[in-house]
Amino acid sequence: MRTVLAALLAASPGVAGADLGPYALSAFGGTTLDNTWDEVFLSPGSIEFTDSHLAGAAVSARVAEPLDGLSIELEGQIVRHFGGQTHWEVNAPIAVARWSRFPWDETVRSSAAFGLGLSLAGETPAQEVENEGDSQAFMAYWMIELEVAAPDSPWSLIGRLHHRSTAYGLFGEDGGSNALAMGLRRRF
Image (cartoon, rainbow, N blue to C red):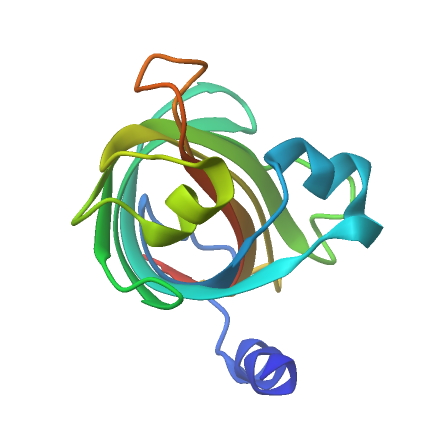
């Protein structure tokens, strides 16, 4: 799969020198984890995947650029869970802060982003109940994302940590989940 995505990026016609546009469509898939979000960063060798997976689509729009290299985006997602749990999830509105100025941009276009919003699951997620003892459909959502692409290509690869939580008790006492996901994005 990685080889296919790399070939698509390499074969994609560039848009030399052009603004890639303020909009993007993304498709991603991943697997939920038995780990907490901080364990992903502090103990990456201890990551344990569950038998629950997700596939999602997102649409986003750049709405502001307060600093050179920093953009603010709004994103909405629809996600289907399958395997250990089967339900739909909608995440919106997600406010995303994206940094896109790096020293290697002439070789590889890249960005790092953090997004925060709300999440509504079609039912109480079974994996969250299994991991946390309880959960609820309505929770906080955040994501951390890395994006890489050829410098002038509208196509990019994304990797993200997909996180639902109680926001330290704001949305309940127990619940939440983490997933690692990869995907493809088209900017326009």
